[in-house]
Amino acid sequence: MRISQFQKYSQRENTVTNNVLLMLSRLNDLNVAYYKSMIERLNEGSLQQSYHPQPIFTQQLGVKNGIIDGHIEIKPSKIVIETKLNTKEFIGKLIKYGEAFNSNSHNQLWHLSSVKFEEQEEIEINRRLKETYPNLKIQFNNLLFNDLIENLEGIFEENTHDMELRLLLEDFSNYCISSNLISNEEYKLLFVPTGFSFKWNLKHKMYYCPKHWHSQKFKFFGLYHWKTVRSISEIETIIEADYDFDNDNLKIYSKGHTAEQVQRLHNGLRELEENHEGLKYYVLPENNFYETDFRKTSHGGIQGYRYKDLRDFITLNDYNDVELIANELRKVNWK
Image (cartoon, rainbow, N blue to C red):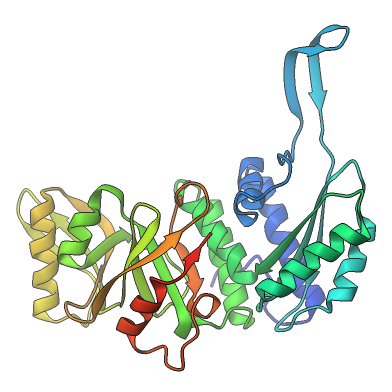
């Protein structure tokens, strides 16, 4: 058994904080661009200032009295993290942490827990930060442990060649899950960008990706296309297989699938007319599959797959009615 990079034997807040910092430090060691991407992703495009975790090298920089030949600048930044396990910090105590920031620094205050502040609480926190520290710009981030994993997965999705990054993702994800920092599987929606394959995905009700993607457990699955989640269902089965189009040969590596499910996959792959290796296929139900319109309102599309807790967007007595969930998601949006 490979030794994990993260301690798994304590749920004390200082241990959890240490492991979060260790993950971020390790991410920076692997590639400072990974760390920069993580910070920017966690802020979802709402950074008040550009984030620069490394020196900025410029030349021929114009100033008031002339042009500087060479210029190296290190912009100051500070991130304060308040970690809770399954609770929220008192707002009054959280506001006091603003005393740690400086007026000439890029300031971020993170509240990291397995539960989030409600929208009105977040509005109050931002209001009180501005009132208490009128000369400071403080970016408040209302974060879940799941947000760290989701964005770490997104970074790996763009850098699948980096095996050290993959191990970091696996270890940190397993640590959070085994430490009960993430426990929303029955409400969790995974949705994936489809791009050019959307019509094929919708027609055959299936999706394919590398075997190691999507390490978190989830109940619901959605197809994302053009800034909106367009379908929701559960997963009927997951098939690991290789397909040789030239010989029309489908080799199955996983077990527990019906002949009908395998035939559906075979028919779909034959239509694509290309070879596939090292992939897994999410086969979705033919009937209990519903179109929806769960729209992204912030700028730009998504770079990779996303997880969302449905309870953050809709309130139901029963989260087992997929058709009802699909209808309710049409009424809300996300950023």
